[in-house]
Amino acid sequence: MPDSLRNDADVLEVPESRDFRAYHAFLRSCRNFMEGPIVRQMGEAYERSVGDGAEPQSLEEAQPVLDDLLEFQLYSWCFRHFQRFKYHRPDFGIFDTVNKDRDHIISELEAAAATAGDDLRLDESLELPEYYRFVDFHQHTGGVYSDPLDGMSYEFGRRTTNPAHMDPNLIYRLSYSQFPDRAFEKVLDWGTGHGAGLIEWQKIHPESECYGVDLSAPCLKLAHKRAQEHGFKFKLSQQDLEHLDFEDDTFDCIFHLFMFHEIPPVNLKNALREAHRVLKPGGLFIGPEFGQGDGSPMFKAVQQSHAWNNNETFTAPWIEFDMDKAARGVGFSKVSIEPFKPYQSGGAKKGSRVTSWRFYQLEK
Image (spheres, rainbow, N blue to C red):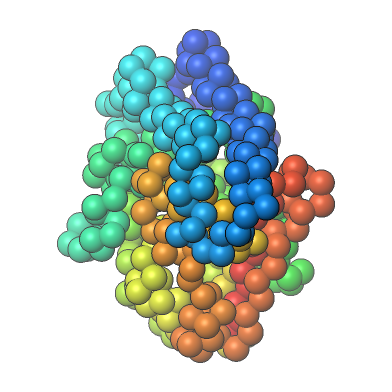
């Protein structure tokens, strides 16, 4: 069912006041300033501080140089607190705004889940990994699994991170534009969240039978509801990426969006091995990620600060993770790691975070 034929009355939405929209537009402008002028000034201050002395050769040497810079201190404060303001401010914060419509949202999600049948498989007995339970990723208090509204709050958080009027699903289409131009019979969204990635995929690839896995039951319920609203049927299931219940050689493609930095190295290696197992021969495991960039000591130090500032704990070890070695070690025959081209050709200013994004394509 094309979006133009949808009945918008059936779409689950949270009412947004004019003040709410103005507040989040202001926060987005602040973030743009943080990622633009402040980052450039921080880089210039770092170069001045190093001067003609010995250039830092490691993250450990670069970190104290950055720590002494007022520009870096301001950047770190902004990174931490703009996100906190987004979620936690009374009245205009995401949690407070979503909670005002709590009973209605839960009722709609449960009603959709009740009629899902095999399209939505939830596992109340699933033991969530410790790394997932003990970290409030992105400052999302309690994680994205502990409250029935977590899926909606997570979706809201992603949407309000984008600059005003920007399509929050554009990033999925930009990622898919880098895929090989061919048909994919059966695909798996690896960490499907609220389902937007699958929805955008199905629009482009109507030939695909679409599956999605995630640890979060609230996110999967919302993903199922969003699929219903678009007239799509996905096979969604609550599973651990390290222990999938699919048969060997099931999928033509497994795709993801910025998942690697959210998983500790030992768990990531296990998840890669499992992804390799469920791919068909010649199948692709593919998607973008940030955090490794140009490999300079300053860049690594800034990326590590993101780990602490935004509760993305495993960004720190991801900075040094050798994906080529890990992927080949679990059996992938071809590994391609390239700059994320949509942001390398004038789509973003040099030195911004997005110019450090990489596109990972692993082939079985």
